[in-house]
Amino acid sequence: MNTQAPSAGRILTMIAFAASCIGLLLYLWISFGGTSSLGARGYEISAEFAQATELGSQADVRISGVNVGKVISVGLDRRTGLTRAVMEIDPQFAPRPADTRAILRQKTLLGETYVELSPGSPAGRKLADGATLPRGQIAPTVQLDQILSTFDPATRRAFETWMQQQGTALTGRGQDLNAALAELYPFATNVDSVLAVLNRDSAATSTLLNDGGQVFSAIARSPAALQQLIINANGAFSATAAQSTALAQTIQAFPPFLIATKATVDRVARFAHTTKPLVDELRPAAVQLTPALKSLAVLAPQLKSLLVNVGPLTHTSSTGIPALEHFLDDSVPLLTRAKPYLGGLIPVIDYINTYRREIAAFFANGTAAAQATLPAASGHGLLHYVRISNPINPETLTNYSHRLSSNRGNPYLVPDGYTALSGGLPVFGSYLCTNNPPPAIGPTISPSLAAVLSADYYTSDPGGPPCKAQPPLGEETTGQLQAFPQLQPTP
Image 1 (spheres, rainbow, N blue to C red):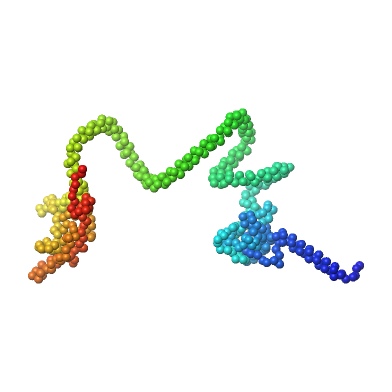
Image 2 (image 1 turned 90 degrees about the vertical axis):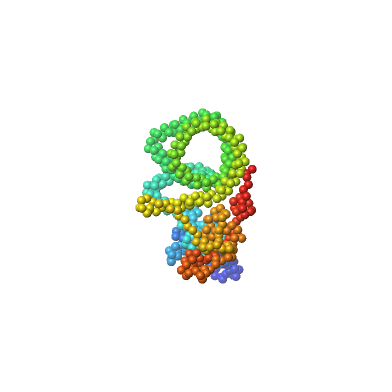
């Protein structure tokens, strides 16, 4: 037994050895993702998960499959009953946007869990250091046992049987399974597009699976039919193998067919692109045409009757149309001689056409004025009388040496001039607008007669509405810049 005190060199050697062991352990701890209280604390955010039994300290924090940090602590929040995970984000990925979302995902089938963060909006507001993600931004995690618990007992027993049979089928075939797994990546790459098509046509896919299940159920109920199906399929494949040369020729001719089809599809696409503007322009007309076609269905029986009855007319027109052509040919000399007279008549008709409303009103008003009736004095029948009205104004009492300012007489009113009565009738020219007021009632008139004249012949505004001149009559009727139109014969 050595009772001598250790020398200073030995003490320094032991201290150096212990320090090197501590340093090595600390290096290994930090290399494997551990944290050290000696270093500066990084950017931290927290999230509370409802199901985080498999989440542990030093679990990965990922964004789009890239590690951006670690979970430095996991604990129970007694206030909410949720698992609170504190995550330290690497400096190059901090700070995180405020709309970042979090979810727990499994790294392996053994249940190893990591936190998956969404990228968020780079231009949006950022989370402060130590902030907690809102609970609405934490997505629920679906565990494998939760998926299996949704199956009914019969489905779970079938799944258990299937797993057992898979284990039996793969016994001694591990090498084949490894080879199949090696080809899984290209299969998954190609099957993604297939699954996208199936997802787009989910209704048809569901129908296919349902019908397929019924077919397999029917086959399972009839093994003899299944055997016959296999025999028939073998015969079909044998017949196909016998026609291998023709099949090869068909396959060789298929690429040129695809090329021609592609060219046709390209032409159809160009045609569709060219006709799209036309179709877009016709779409409003098509929308308006639909009610017209629906209304036309009501007239369809009458239209059918018309088309049936027009048959004899069509037959007769085979002789009537040549006769009409002969008549028109013979009328050419007569029309040629009548051209000078028609050339002078057409301007008159055109001028009358501009006053068609006034002419129609003249005859209508004249007819309506004579349609008033009263019972006859003898009590038998009705008597017609003419309804007339006489203008009442100062100029009906006597003649004046000057045109009064209230005079709006116009024998040559422009077409449709009576449609603007609210603003007063226009005069023929501005020279007819005067400043001569109506004279006052003289003192020699008796008071009773003066009261009647003031009430009936003199209004509150004896000057009338503002006096305005109508446009030149020639401009309004024939397009000539003159007061009176001059009708010119048609050449």
